[in-house]
Length: 348
Image (cartoon, rainbow, N blue to C red; front, side, top):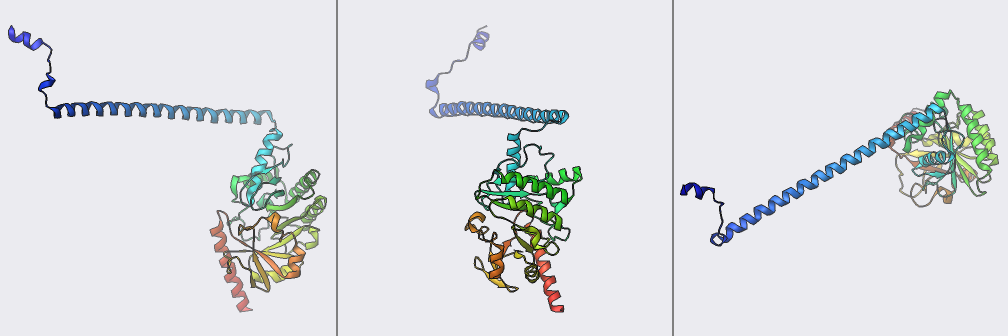
């Protein structure tokens, strides 16, 4: 019995008899156990917080989808304020940025085929308005960059692709889009300041004489100067653009002579500036690297492209280095065009 009673008695530890090192090990194991427990508690809390964030994000997406479907079912249009925000984002397609002012407050983003807004684009500068067109419906098939690295098609935001889808769904032609652009230009001209510049065709072009005449006539209502670049210089007369400072967009220096003969000032896309920031002479033209692209100024401050008559008189052209997400394909195309031009020149 005495042995059984001794087994049932609680064990008593006499710490006075324990060595100091045993106490240290005991305290260390307790500390580690508490630390592990704290870490596991933190992990559980973080996992719960992440699950809650994911649940809220899913609910937000589902709510957005349901609202969009409800608007589509009712056939209602977005508010003018919402149209301002969506249209403004596309104005930076010439280098990134956003803008102010509605392209057309009476059209939803699913109906727009032309965007015309006051841009906040850093390259263009303050107070510049810009128009954006669908590329596939307006650009000539002869453009070597079409579906081949075109910056307008691959620009930020996907706005050009949206315009192309809208135009295709509505069955619009290049002439229809030119009329829509002219309407927006006249509408914006009524409220734009007298000093506001207009950059035509950040993406897109006027591929027929009639389209160019429609846009050129509308630009007569614009108080300040309008400018742009066209790949259609070979068949659209310079006179169709009226007072617009429209530069021929070329890819090789040997094209400059033909463009100048047709009354166009010239701009050229290059894969590199051979003389750095300094101009160089090629094909009988003094080529100036775009000052805005060199980060020395903005288009609104530079204004070289706004004076096409002065460029022709001085026999000068503006050179732009390829840029955008498709610049590698553009560079390859430029190299091939240069080789072809040199081969044709040698053969002749």
